[in-house]
Image (cartoon, rainbow over all chains, first blue to last red; front, side):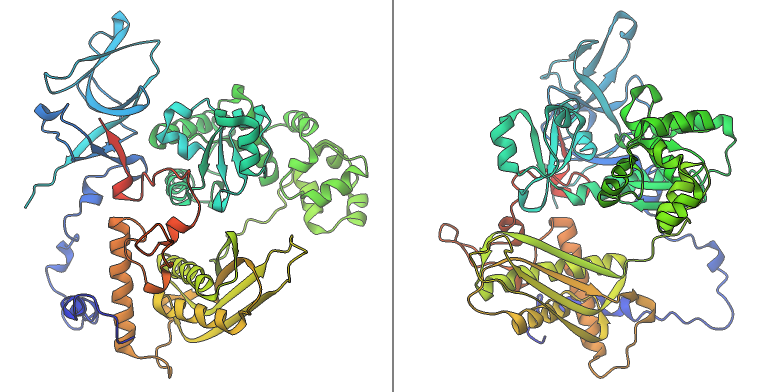
Length: 146
Length: 418
């Protein structure tokens, strides 16, 4: 047992105190206590529907002008109704793609998936295409190299 | 199947099967695969011979299936205070809170909500009791006209359904009983329902009597919550056969690790660790040997290291030279909730306990973020094969060539968006 060693002992030393945090409170309760809601929690505050929330990793720069770049993580809510102008994840030609949804021409029989990069073509979809809007992108998580 | 299709919409109307551990045989089939004639339990190589590439095969991805069915269940659970999850993909709801005429539209709406939120199709059966509800869900699944929800709410509908429903498909009627009933000219659910109560009482035990009552519309099968899991078993058949103790020990270490991780997820603790080994009983030409050995732990634990050590001890006590083993497994039992843990025993060392706890926490965290088996115990690693320089991990030794990504549980396997 004694030969287990992750980075010397430092890791345990750092976190040890959390484990022995005192649970026992006595005497007059703190007046701040009733205002305590716990800290800000992305899971609680940003993910409205955990059952319908999925994640996808962006590949390529077709949405670069929308601030969505290669390697970002898209937070996708499958239960949201896609609107005109929503950033959506669509499944077409056997792959997932992230684009703006444009339903302006729906009455004329087609909708469009628009990239946010002039180097990429607009994808026009008519009724015959094997296509579905898989989910609506609600957030994008971006990591800055630090 | 449905879980795989959520992330592979291209497979929606294609024949798809899921394979058992080690890619041995077919354990689940899509309707399209069924229609082609692919049989349940069919060995994988045989299916390939017969159907070539026309059937898409997946190694069972239980991580994905578990997460997707949990999502479905949490939506279902919101519908009624009386919710009983019956298996990984089945649940009962008691709908006292709904009036009779809104049931059908409620069920259809629930299916739609689940479909929209998770991409998963469900079948909903609504009836006076669980046996009839399960029967109704079969109809909902197999006839598109029901729009995924079948309500059996009158005697007329009930009788019509019973007449079309094979007795062997009825909830609680197993294969043996089906054969026995067939010898009594009972082949459809209706045939059983028509028998007299006296005859039923003199011929069958309580469970079958209850089924009979339910087929006749009474609510007879008690609603009980499944008890907290009392034991966890991780076992696999090997790809080939193994006689070497070191390799066997490595398998056992991996099974033990999985047991420990599962205990920690449930926040339960093992008091007994057991190991079993079996030779291949289909090989009459080889010497046969099976054994089971267990070790009681004074202090209940869910530490990977302690459980793995105990499992290895068990294995070493019963392993014998000269046998070729086909299967091994680790069972941990008598688990109890963490709160009741006794800490004043001889083998208990508080500092060691905390260190183990920290180590498991760190390992779980790394494996969750970086992918499972990013960090493993030394004893979990297999000796390297001639063409590989590094030691092999369990996941690479176990055959699951057709496993889909863990789209919802591993950051490095989420879908790619082009």
